[in-house]
Image (cartoon, rainbow, N blue to C red; front, side, top):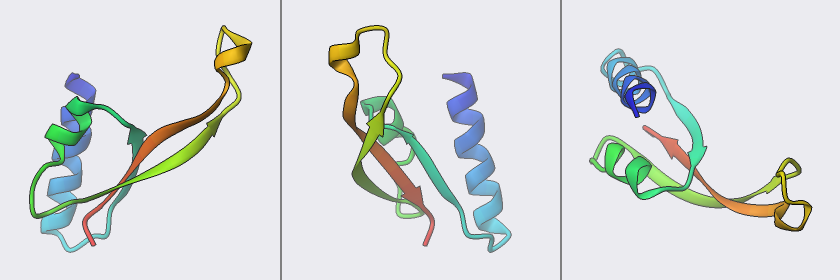
Length: 69
């Protein structure tokens, strides 16, 4: 969680410097709460995952694409 907050804070800092930011992150309520502001747009996409200890659970999962533009 600490690293997620640090990433969000870095994105905010870069936004204040007029830098475009795009972050790909796992879909979760925590992530949604961290980036819930007018600064960021959150889009949900389906992303393929080939690694899982349970082979039957490999496949598409929801992922967030977070941008400041």
